[in-house]
Amino acid sequence: IIVELIHVKSLKLNSKTSSLIILTYAAAGLIVVLWIYLMNQWDGEKTEYWYHWRRNIFTVVTQPANVIVDYEIVATWVDLWERTSKMSKSSSRNVIALRYFLRFVAFMMAFGFGLIIRSSSMAVLLSLSMLPSISGIIFVSIGGYLINKTICPDKNDVENRNWPVAESIRRASLIVCSSKLCEIIGLLGMLVTRNHPQLGYSYGFFNVLFWFMYIMRMWGWLHYLIYSCRRNLKKYAKVDVSPYFGFALVGLNELVGKYFSPSGE
Image 1 (cartoon, helix red, strand yellow):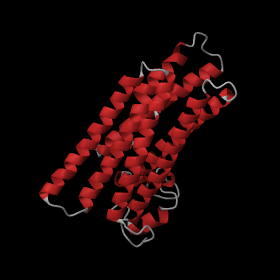
Image 2 (spheres, helix red, strand yellow):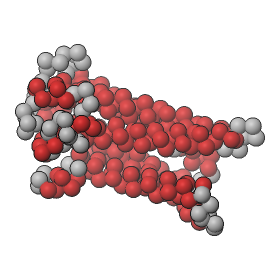
Image 3 (cartoon, rainbow, N blue to C red):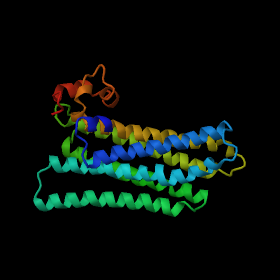
Image 4 (cartoon, helix red, strand yellow):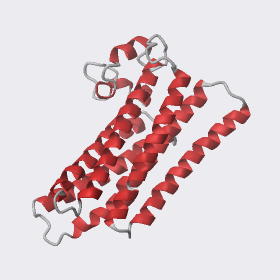
């Protein structure tokens, strides 16, 4: 998507672009972590040097990106709210201040998380790792609810021209919040079973659950970002062959074709 936005000269310095870049950063870290696990499982690394390094990747790459992406995408909803609402200059300034405040909170949480837990015990690491998921559920659910109430109060009102946008936000919020809830369950499971004499065998299950739902959360955000970039992906607008829209707009294709022109207007 980033390459295509560059190709059509539409890559701008905004929340959508930063979200795409951070998702790419998180995906790269995730690939490295999963490769380390795979090599360890296959006894491909005798010294386990990289296996012990996975903690650093977790605290510097995957979890900070978890926090920042949530807040950046909520900032895109703030932008959408600003564009769709009639407000005074003072209100507009307050909205801009809110957007920067959210970004500041995200980066403070991300870097604070990395600095605090890099040298902490595994129990502290697993416990504090729940904070990004908990805060993400709160902000995403509240932000999604408020923006949908603004642009399309009735989720069954398919005649509303904003319904496809609102539905994409609802779906992304549902996928992301559900995934984060399962991430918390996975972290709790690892915290309880890591040294448990009877339940220790189930540690691997909770570990896999956490990483699988981490991927699902990224997938949910990717759905929304593809839809939000639809105006710049015109050459993929054919529903029957679209690698973008066919992936991002399952169940919405006909409605998008009905209420939006090929240019996305």
